[in-house]
Image 1 (cartoon, rainbow over the protein chains, first blue to last red):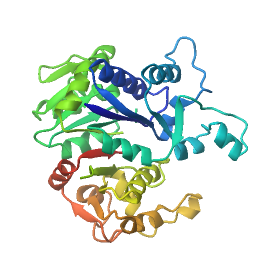
Image 2 (image 1 turned 60 degrees about the horizontal axis):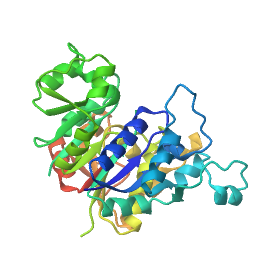
Image 3 (image 1 turned 45 degrees about the horizontal axis):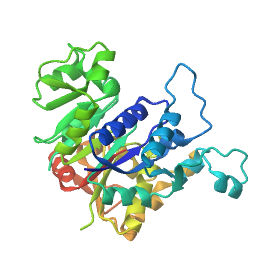
Image 4 (image 1 turned 30 degrees about the horizontal axis):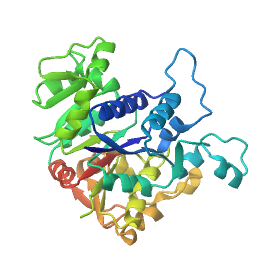
Length: 130
Length: 97
Length: 120
């Protein structure tokens, strides 16, 4: 089965961890993840600026490792990212902002990528809220 | 068509469970995740509402365990591989974000 | 046949970015000519209350975007009759004329009809 997984909550939200565990279980079960799409506060999971206390789960780091290891398509909604200050180098230059918070393997793109994933996948699973 | 509804908010002081129960269909199922597991707290209104509803009810085992919530025999505690299987068994997943 | 998507928007217009970001998903889908439906449920019905003034809160006025929905090819617009009634709104006097009031049973059937759902 092909899954599209969308994440709407920040790294410290329990639903973000659940999304990662679901994604891992999906691959372990022999399924495919056509795209991970981070929207709303989900964009914070792609931020390289997040500093997680030593005794807590470092979700951004775990997500990055997961995407890199399995060469997944990790897309961050550009509009949601901009308004939350999660900029890549290109956008930081464009808007003359100091901090570059996101880079590879994450790609900033539009909501069209979410719709594209929904069309391609057999299942759309959203995580977020609490 | 059948839907797996997923809740993750505490049912106390939040209307997602109530709204979900209004629209959930006869062939649908409900997965309690995160704080939504508190709906299994015995002797509470959410617990009673679910117990008489006769729904296909699931709870993430880690969430019931972490909160020391007993899982009644009308609910099934599942792990992530089972969550994945459920999401395939039902035609779509509706997470109440 | 493209897969259809139902967006269930259940938050009030200015409770953070949820109403707007839900609408953005709908508009993007419409722009790509995808079959998108939009249901206003729970506090989401407040997005359709008339005579709202977003400017006073220095917020974006969503109603212009809502009115634009049919132009984006999004014509499947619904409101939960119970949610509206509970919140003192007359489902026949909402800011979006094209919206259809549905009972709970009809909403169950509506969710069933769509290939995918996002509830925000």
